Length: 315
Image (cartoon, rainbow, N blue to C red):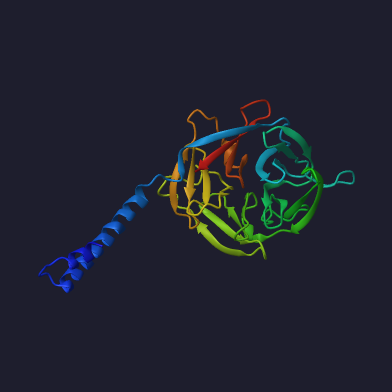
């Protein structure tokens, strides 16, 4: 519009000259816009909460059979499922080698509903959106510690009220690609892969859920946040599904959550309360992430049987 007005006035300035000047102005504007975009992309409010938000708690009404492991949530059922872990007794003529570990069901308000014994030494429990089933990954899924019955990946049957029946189906038997016997894999239904963090290091194995073969290895940056492998959760890393903030790793010793992208690049951290009583056992169990965006952390010193805290780490 300015250009047209100038041309409409009586002036000795040639149109070609005016066009050249406006092209320069436009180019400079684009450069300034790119610089500002770059600045604001680095200084904008992060999606990471500075302080992890404690949203609600699930007070356990029944003591864990051995050790509390992970948590799953099914939106349609509006229920949480908390899995215990624990090795099965040795088989005998009188008793089958079936784990006594329970899976406990709570409603959306954290009220206790029931406990069931499917017979697995659970390490991970999650809701698979691809199959619409509740599934569990057992201890020693890789058979790194030797083959044992009831080992692998299983689907857990629910009745029409969303309660566990105790019945299950085999999805996969042992799969060496999972690596560490104690890994607590998390599932990515979009890419149809598992992320299995390994003990005593920064490696996360990516396992294809179609053929259970190793796709690649992700190495987490421990140098930038200044942590060692013994500072953080040994066998569990949460997959969030949030682009650019795909992984959350609990830093037990420094009471914070470390956030990484899908390539293992460190993005930032979210602090936990300094007064929180995290135990050394939280390096190995009592950790979980549900598909409604909550990181669950088991605090065994709170209430008679312990309490799961549900944290919001990302906005």
